[in-house]
Amino acid sequence: MPKLWNETIEAHRRAVRDAILSTTAQLAAEHGVRSVTMSQIAEQVGIGRATLYKYFPDVEAILLAWHDRRITEHLEQLAEVRDQADGPGDRLEAVLRAFAHISRQTGAHNGTELGAFLHRDERVVRAQQQLHGMIRDLLAEGAQAGVFRDDVAPDELATYCLHALTAAAALPSEAATDRLVTVTLSGLRNGHSMPDGRGPAGRHEHHHGHHAGHPGH
Image (cartoon, rainbow, N blue to C red; front, side, top):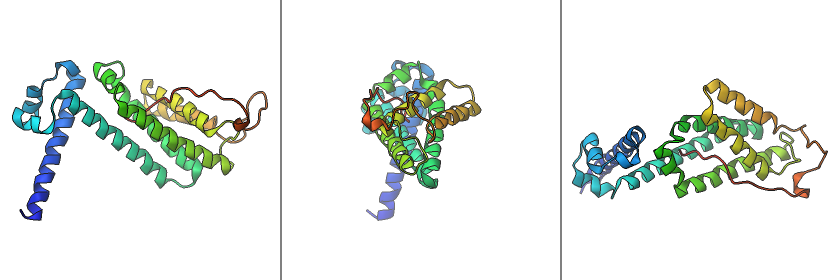
């Protein structure tokens, strides 16, 4: 079979798969996960049920694939804005602003059946860990450069950032989201110190909470 023909078939399959993912997510958001059927999806996409089953075994598998695609896109977006900025301060600000706006955009699923289903996805934990590591590394780099405070461990500050910016999901506007990022960044800048005058966090005991926030809902 000619190479061009193979590429055309693969492009068609990707297009059908993308349509299945997007359609299923929209139906689940509108009607609830348990209300969506494979027949309904096939009809909306414009394919037969038999064809749909060649791609996915059930509705949950489709939603997990859609969620995986969305998480991947968000992590790639965060890495891209990081790499486009210059210096540790600008790189961290770019990542935090992008994450806050992603949190606000995806907050519509919070409290819904779809949101509850997606929150159980194990991909959420992996995405949290990856994002936490990205922010931690930028904070460590910035602390070494004298841009960010060094009296609290970067790992702890990264957890603080994610907890703070996840609140963007409940904010009413992009302007409010930008203000939240500005307030969060102000607490990271060098020149701040702990009230009791403690030195770098590496010399003190810290309690790390569960990593908050992820770029997937």
